Length: 340
Ligand code: AHG
Ligand code: MN
Ligand code: MN
Image (tube, rainbow, N blue to C red; front, side, top):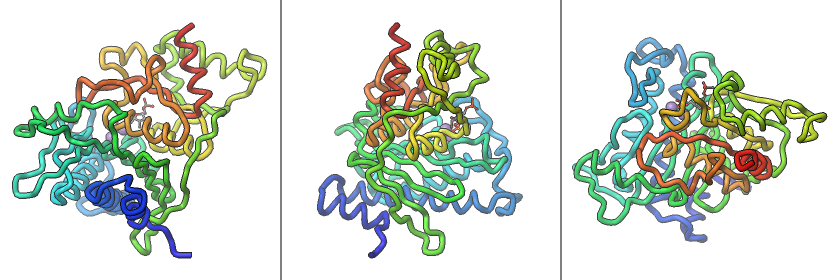
């Protein structure tokens, strides 16, 4: 049987199911092409041009974090790939203070794209899985796009308004995981032919799990409900939850989320005392929202502990939020600890 490529899947979603527009199809194909280019750059590692692609860029981003060369390169690849196609009004990124407006020499489209160009930066230099996360919104009618400052307001829509979201994982294989609101599909990069081939469809996350992911070194800074919940999990079979849990922490959200997409689990980056002034660790617009959309599309759940992530109304492009997501029943259990 003929392989189902990403292009074919998107064509079917457009032509037969009418779930997406032609412009959204183009946007997603271009985003996938950019992920392919990032995957190729990462694959070169220390052999990449100009001293390799590993190491520090020597600059800080808006969050005050030191940028790696690959953070900057991935951001440039995504901007350049997406600005000329006529399907976008503006783009926002973890690595840019303000949105990037489509230059006047190109036509403007009706979509907004946000991305975390390179997720898991601390894993670049140690050759552990990293990724790209992206989210697509519609640009509100009549939005002021005259300046980047004005355009930032157009992005401040709740996660429920996303029309598509996805991530690429650059691991032993490069995968693209995508949802256009019609379930979750997984594509594997065929490096010889240079295209993405569908390798899983209708992804469903098991409702129950006995595997959790959290950075345990922050335990003393967590809020009481999260401390109690994790204590109960680590108490194992003899504890109140009556089962032995296993723990994993890759420190790349994409890799931890992808494990959950594959075999279930719960992922948490909760509020902690060090992060309180910032609102949390993970960014709402280009980390929490796209991942929450994908997780819900696969039958899982995503919460701050007190609220569904997709219902949050953002007030800032780079806003941070506590994140608890994964297998539905386990997330409900974690949320339950916050109300007792
Ligand atoms: P980024 O590299 O885009 O800044 O994101 C890193 C995030 C996320 O991917 C991961 O889950 C988390 O930071 C890891 O944090 P710790 O280093 O505190 O474990
Ligand atoms: Mn990230
Ligand atoms: Mn990043």
